[in-house]
Every structure is written in structure tokens, then in C-alpha cells.
Length: 572
Image 1: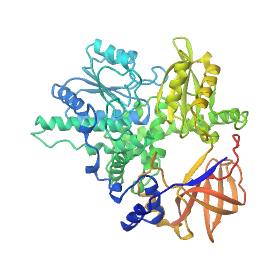
Image 2 (image 1 turned 90 degrees about the vertical axis):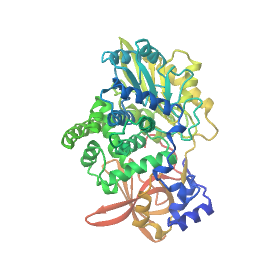
Image 3 (image 1 turned 120 degrees about the vertical axis):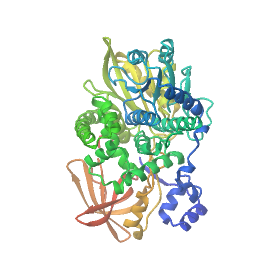
Image 4 (image 1 turned 180 degrees about the vertical axis):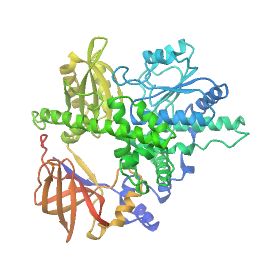
């Protein structure tokens, strides 16, 4: 059953924010998210953490400066998601701007290679005769691959943000999450780590008077890539990440962005003047990711790297086509998954592990996310895979607050050696490969590990809200004030809750519930996406604020997220 609770906030902080011009509802929400003073909301770049605080960042900058000045061949090894694509694009464009003449990249194929730097991938890279490999958004678990590269005489720098395992590569590593790193922000995305390395490289080249004959490159020209990758990878938006995202959005609203990002925004019919962080996550990220899910992420990289807007539009058309195909595949897979969850009694299990014989491995993460939302259980969805005649299942998982998915998989692996071929990830998301004939055993082991590690009440859905709004708060000014700020993972957009009377309701296209609500004498339109059942006349709803702009008229609209005291129904 779903319960609501109101976030706590500090009254003194709220008053200080109000004194600086913030509305009372937004001031409450900011205080509840850890903002201590108005200065915390100052996203000027001079407030960004310095590169010299990030372990090995300056050393990596010096190594890259050496390679640039000696005109060594640099090979970037990336990942097949949006963070990986933006990281590769940033490294490619940034290193060239800093003077590198010979920069190449290679990204593993999702089906053939799997994730990250591997020995077979090093073999392929070696055919292009690189002097230096630099990984972006991967590499922290690639011990064997790094050793193999070194045996071939190839230098390796690992830049990553994923959590390290018990053994890390014996090479130069830049990763805020590596052991011994005291960098205050542990939430940098892969693209954020690479941005810091580029800053350190420029600083090192500046020390060497490498720019004496001309102006040093402005790395802010690539901050749009950092902003996009950070939001799309759903890393927590701590203050340092919000600074990076805010600066990127600021420049994009001014029209200063890569032609590829501009083309993707054009295709999604988004006015850049009103661009916000959620647009990056819901409009641009999925279009880049679709290439990596269904074909090759290299198409996304080429879109982000091209300087020709016309060419970018052509690529954006292809990415749009992939995204439509991805949505169709996702809908079919989700329908199958929902049928399977309907056979499970609510409360019968603490986890969900499902597979489909014809599912696509590039889309299982989205399906896992949808099922997790529906059931409020950690969920892993698997698709079949084959390598050298051996049958595997490739899975992608999503978790709920309080259950660290990577740690759970680590426990499963320790209890059942050999069951999991490989795994990795974070608290809320992880990927893994298992032997196809071990699925039922994995299902049992996953359930046991979840049950043994979950705290009491972990599966009771508690929705944190920012309290009620008064009738006068439902205005366009408050919506625009909220929209102008940076929101995302760990710094979520305000979610309010009020008691409403339902005046009318209608299910649209068997997918969404359209509502007309009344509270405190105010009538409001609302929409509840992916809701296929009607609701009672008197309800307590949690919602976000939105604007409905149509035919020159603007009105406040509510985006309903949840209803209190609703009994779980996994088939709804």
C-alpha cells in the first residue's frame, strides 16, 4: 500500500531563501533537498570543485599532455549508452582542441563484445596501432584487458565513475569512487570525469607554454555534452553536478551547443529558450541511447561530433527512426512482462526476475524500470544471448530505495560462484550476464539475497512529498520558477500533495488517465500517465506542476504521480 509523508525542511533556511526572492513552496522544497543557504543555489563555475582535488587527475593531464606534444596516437574506448557517447565525443573533440592530431575511438558492440574494455577489444584496438588507450565511462573492472594492452606496449589511462571491485587495473586511474580518493563529489558521470581530465590537461599544457602562440581552447564549448551525459546517466545531481548541468543548459538556451544536439532538439520540436534538465533526459538521451540499444552507438557519437548541421539533421533522422523502433519493441516486451507479473500474488515475492525468449538485450533495462515502478520490487529483465555457441542471458536491473542492487548481485555471486558470468553497476541499476540454464537458480538466489539484505518496511512504498499547495499557488509563475532550476536524480523536482475531488475522468487511448480535479475551490486539469484504471471520487494525490500551452493560452496542469492508500495491483 502506498503512503505519503512530507519532507522535513528548515524554517530558517526557508526564510533566508524567501528573503532572496524564492517563493515559499520552492524554498520549502530546496531546504528539504539539503540546500542550507541561498549561496548553495549559486551555480557559477567558480564554485565547481577543482580538478586537483580529484585523485590522479593532474597525473592523467600530464600523461595526455605528453601524448599531445609528442603527437602520439590516442585511442578512446567508450561505452554504448548516452554517457558513453557524450564521453567519447567530449574526449574526441576536447583532445583535438588541445592539439592532438591523431585521435581515434572504439566502442564495444553490445551483443558481440559486452560492456567495457576487454581483451578482445584491445586486440581490435591494437590493429590501429595506438600508443595510448584512454577509457571513458568504463575500465575500472578491466584488469586483464589493461594487462594485455600493456603487454603490447600500449599505455592505458582509465577514466570511469563506476564502483570498483576487489581488483582494479594496475594503471593510472581517474575515478572519484576509487579507493583512497577524497574528491567530495562521488556522483560525477563518466563524461564529468573526462571533463575534469581535459581541464587538467589544458592546465598542464598551459604550464608548458603550449599556448604561447595563440589563445587557449575554451573547454566550455563542450559543456553541453557534459550536461547531456550527466542527466542522461541519471547520476545524483549533487551541487557540483548541478553546476555542470546548469552551465550547459545556460549555453544551450543561448543557442551555443554542438550541431548534433541542436539537430536532436529540432527533431523533438523543443524550443531551446525553455530547455530544462528533464528535456535532456527524456528527449535527447533516449534518441542517443536508441542507437546503442538497437544498432551502434557510433551513430550517436557521429551526431554529437559533426560540425555540419545539415549532416547532423540527417543523422538525427536515423536516430529518430531507431527511437520509434525501440519504443515499439519496448511496448511489446512490457506487455509480455506485465502478463507474467499478473501471475504473481502481491506480497508473494520480494524481487522480480523475468526473461523473454525473443526479447532484445538493448531494451531490457527499460522494461525492468517499468516493472519496478509497477511492483515496487527490485527487478531484473533478461534477454537471450549467444557467444561462441554458448547460451547466455543478459540482464539489466533496477532497484528501489534502500536496496543496493550491485551489492545484492555481489552477494549472489559470493554465495553461488560461477552462476554469474559478470556483473557491475550502482545502487539503483546494474547489468549482468548469467548462463541460460541457470535462470531458475538465479531467480531463487536473487530472491534470497534481496530478502536477507532488505530492511524492515523496504517494500512499503513511501512517497516523499513537499506538502500541500494552497489554491493561490497554482499559478504559471510558480511553475516557471520551478522549471528554471536544475532537477534530477538525488535532487528531484518538487512533488506536492493535496486532497482532491474528482469532477471527471477519462482513459485516453487505453494508456493515460485524464482528470478534472477540484481542491479548495480551484478547478484543475490533470493527467496521470500510464494509468489505465479510474480512481475514487475523493483522493489524496501526489503531483508535479506543469504548464499546458495551447492556442496562445497558458494554464496550470498537474502531472499525477501517485495516490495514497492505493492497494497494490501488479496487473493494473
